Image (cartoon, rainbow, N blue to C red; front, side, top):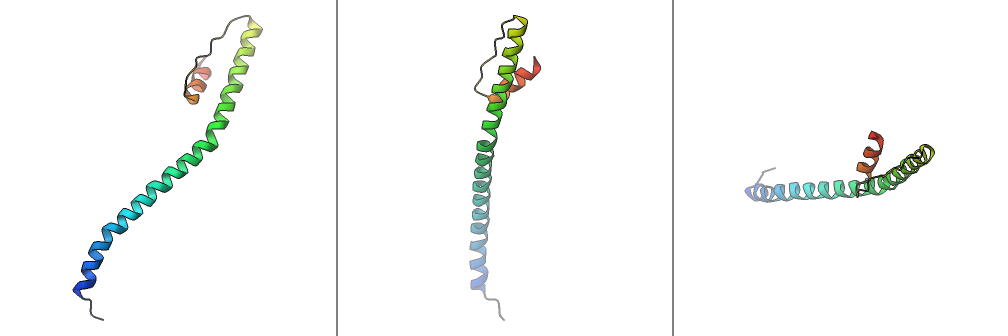
Length: 85
């Protein structure tokens, strides 16, 4: 079988398109996977933060002290602050 110049030119044009398609599909898949993980983990962390806050408020009531739990939009930051106390 003779390999003609026409096939080489066609392959030269298709290879960058193939890599572009592979890259875009990889970025899309990673983004969707990250979104799915966020939706799966975030509610559990919120529940854990709420439980820690209730626990610390219960400890404060027992000891007669007032606890001011810092508010933050980031649940992980709140959780880490509560663990440091």
